[in-house]
Length: 125
Image (cartoon, rainbow, N blue to C red; front, side, top):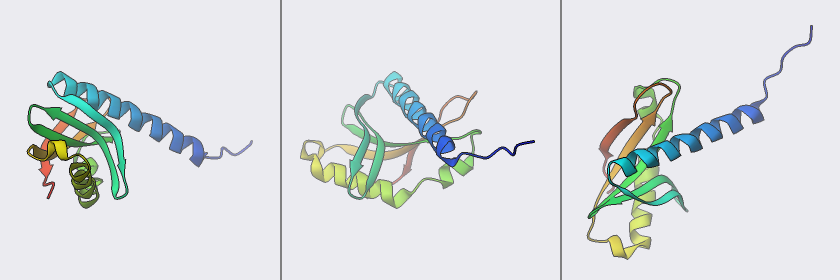
């Protein structure tokens, strides 16, 4: 009987697709909360921000995590300093937002569960 081999490339592509779907759902979730999406997958030299959203004079830098089950493990996977540096880079690159309040949120999506939205998960500065 032939042995089944795992295909790490295929698994990585599946995880990438699941992550992109989670980001799309998280953006929709934020839009339902009356946020305007300014950017998705905003790349900087110091890191990437999954979603940048605005409501009034509030900017939200959202980190999106897709997990099989919701829980603290998703929050532990967040690289706080990298996201904070990327948010600071965004602010320096976009002076039109200089007087805005900013926060970093984490949105965790898991199949069969409502999105878990942790507002103001940690500081931008």
